Amino acid sequence: MHIQFSQSRPQGARLIAHVVDKGKLPAATNAAMRAGAEAARFKGTAGQTFDGFVETDGGVARLALAGAGDKNDEARLANLEKAGAALAGKYQSTGDKQLVLDLSESDLTAIEAAHVLLGLRLRNWRYDIYRTKLKDEQKITLESVTVVGAPEGIEGAWAHAAALAEGVEFTRELVTEPANVIYPESFVARCMERFEDTGAELIVLDEAQMEEMGMGSLLGVGQGSTRESRILAIRWNGGGSEAPVAFVGKGVTFDTGGISIKPGPGMEDMKWDMGGAGAVAGGMLALVKRKAKANVVGVMGLVENMPDGNAQRPGDVVKSMNGQTIEILNTDAEGRLVLADALHWTQEEFQPSRVVDFATLTGAIIISLGNEYAGLFSNDDQLSKELSEAGEAVGDKVWRMPLGKAYDKLIDSPIADMKNIGGKGAGSITAAQFLQRFIADDTPWAHIDIAGMAWSDKPGRTWGKGATGYGVRLIDRLIADTAEG
Ligand code: BES
Ligand code: MN
Ligand code: ZN
Image 1: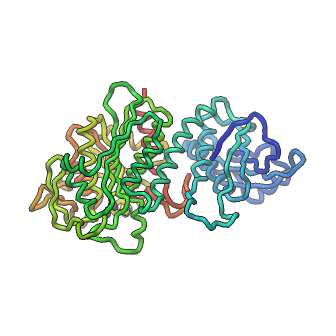
Image 2: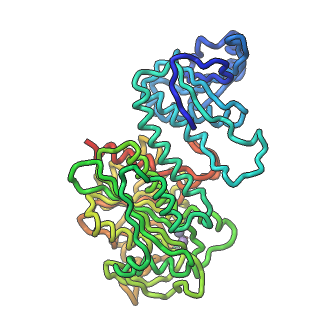
Image 3: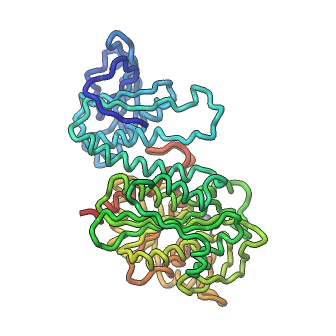
């Protein structure tokens, strides 16, 4: 979506929108519209919309009102995003190509106005490349927003928000693509394209290199697939000489469960089992595009989990890069196996100051937290607090869950150092305990289980049905708040 700023309203504008604080209709509305708004009980609460037609410059234009709620609401920025998103949701398929956002009567700051635009752009995103038979009225027609009367400083504020939007959209694209299109090698290729000429450094490990390093845990998962496994690292050095912050993502490009195969209904959802890697790729893109003043590395463990004559079996014992042995009791508990080697390699290779991993790791976290909060597991109170605050600020919310020795014991194995599943209870926690066995004691680490967050069955705050882009804004905010200046 194209966003531009203009001094005056473009000639012949047919769709003109105003952001309305609760109880304050703009002067541009006429008596009929004011009566209509009252009759429709339009009050300007966040995300509420109302429209009517007015005569302007010799023509007739649709005047759209988007509610932004109470000016003093502590969720002001989120409410402004809702207002922008509501406009996109309502007018994206009306046939109007251009929306004029008239801010000349509003007293929004540049940052506030940028949030309206962010909501508009994010909610307008949809991935229709495979829908070749859409009728005209089903297509997204809204292409551009012209902002009139924007506050001073809008260009800078929007540049930051636009980088964020690019990151979120890239994550959504990766997550939405089917698994015959996005598999480990093509995931890498798409990142290569996207990061070309950005100043980021991309490092790729192929199977021979991972074999050499002893990554038996990750490689075992990909063993049944004809698609080769990969590790991708994206490095951004925008800071001084300090150690980087590392983000690590689970990138299972399709999870059939392997020999412990999943039931058929709903299995198609497992195309988005690379949502953690998608969040890391998009988060890195946002940071790189806005030239973040920090050192950051994003590492993605990319594999496909398939049943096959060569697939790993329940009962197999594999060895991870750091020499620990793992008894595979369920080949569907594969994400932790991928992350084990990816996490260890990340610590060895980059000596990060902190490690945060994102993974669609367990169905159990959806039982615990539904689709409102991702599960946060951490060995560090400070990092937990920073992530919780960042998440609250941008809407990518996390809820801390416990870790502890008693849970750790549940993954001891009689034949190897550990087994890859616990018992019946606490499935998300035993998964996190497994990961912790691959984290050095003195490395602040957090694991974020996003199984309930990467995909949405219904439209939400700034997304339609489908990939949400969860994690990108959390990554961006954590870096902005804790690693830059
Ligand atoms: N990718 C799944 C977890 C998942 C489930 C993500 C639903 C999104 C929606 C993961 O690899 C998995 O299969 N986990 C198993 C673990 C079990 C075998 C211990 C699960 O959650 O059932
Ligand atoms: Mn699985
Ligand atoms: Zn999985």
